[in-house]
Length: 459
Image (tube, rainbow, N blue to C red; front, side):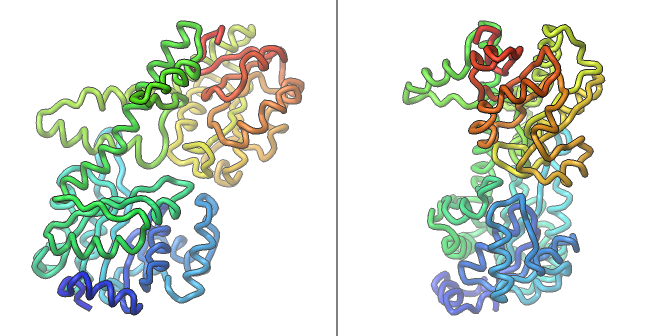
């Protein structure tokens, strides 16, 4: 069906009649949940991924433990015959709309769009006239036009907005709650033409209760997604910098922030070990790279990235100084890291600041153990961690424990286990609390030495 030749009303009627087929290119952490949401909206969905293991896992309804609820959704739509995965891009030939949801990242400080360009060309090689392509990956300014449009046109021989439509609608979702966010957050939508905008809007609008935010151009939509993540990165950096000053003053950042945030226009963020994940550490460089190419130096964004990237090293300094206060050298000390995921209550350890923390400690000669009850132990071991399944085993005979990720399970249970943990550890025992989840007076009353990001020695 040449969906680009239909009116938005006709597209909606075809969807409600169950006659539209959507193809999702990229079945990763955002693409597969998007496929499930599209199936729920009424599409017959095919997914394409070059990773045979992922394709087989989808088709078997296999487990996707790092994203809550995803396994059940996949099983439901595969069993209903509404979702099937392939390694071949040939299924695009029978599709009415294609969603490109492949990963984009920065290598160092340079954006890498290699996967996106390759995917765009592969779509172009198999597309028919009348297709609507909706890009959902996060990209820098002008990338929809310079990379995706170019790849589609070169490979297909078709002209965008004449023989096929192209729209951009960046995904707004957080790992650990992707399906919920996709179904509830407002979605920003733009098109290379008004026709693509209207068609994409009616389609995307069926997937979320949050509605659609139409913007005037794909350039605006590109900047919207980047601005959201840069805002968070810069504000986290501000919180981290204030936290460092609080340490020197011997006061508690939490008390400062709680009081300051009673002012309606103040929204201080939470400082800690740094910024992890697939988005915030990478996306600012998409904007920075473009700005530098236009002789604009975005000093605030560059500085924010530097501050947030420096926090694992600061945590190492707290550990080294704390051990010295215990009469110990970091070389030869045994250190248990509690939490390995990239964010609280996540089971995904990829792109976590904990990786750098562990690497730095090992370079200094420490023996590092890792415990995270939310991350499968095989995943941790595959990443090279000396991983433990039980907290008691992880802390037995260690000199220091580091609260590296403030999982809810740690916030709720760790303080009640401090005496037991103290008994397991070598004395003097040190706790380094990167997220200030423990009561320092209670920790010290049990005999621990205590250090924390954003808390002075008296805090």
